[in-house]
Amino acid sequence: MSLSATKIRDSLTVLFSNLCTFSLILYYIILFESVFYIISIVDKLWRHPKRTNKTTIYGDLIDEHIPAAQYRAEVNSEPVECSVCLSKFEEGVVIRELQCSHFFHKECVDKWLQQDSPTCPMCRKTVISKEIVCQSW
Ligand SMILES: [Zn+2]
Ligand SMILES: [Zn+2]
Picture 1 (tube, protein in one colour):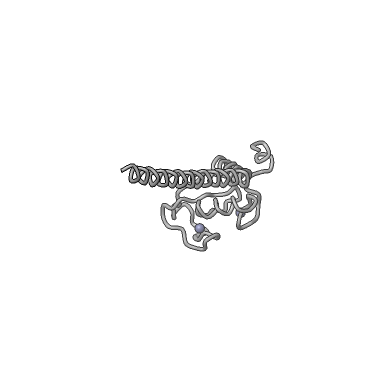
Picture 2 (cartoon, rainbow, N blue to C red):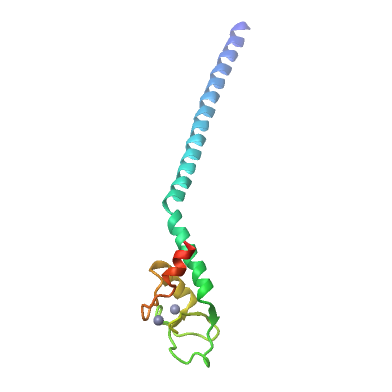
């Protein structure tokens, strides 16, 4: 009687310690995962803050100084194709006309202006003057 009770107690102890070990391992895995997650977030924030800000500032400046408009075939007789993507303008498509009177698809020219320094893809004329960019910095 007492022997089987001891056996049960022993096996319960083993089971309990196994559970403890298991939950400890689980705990460490979760801890490791969260630390890894935090590190990856911090790493992202550290690596790209300047670039993101610059793009956002340029985007805001472009929106402020070069208004977007809708393409109208009768108003905009020439040129009829966007020199960035080389496809023809369709009626009512959103375009952006630069100060040099060259115009492109809004999406095309926005991508272009954010990748390089803001110059016209056609004539390389500065799109936003350095003074404006410096003021906004
Ligand atoms: Zn285009
Ligand atoms: Zn131009």
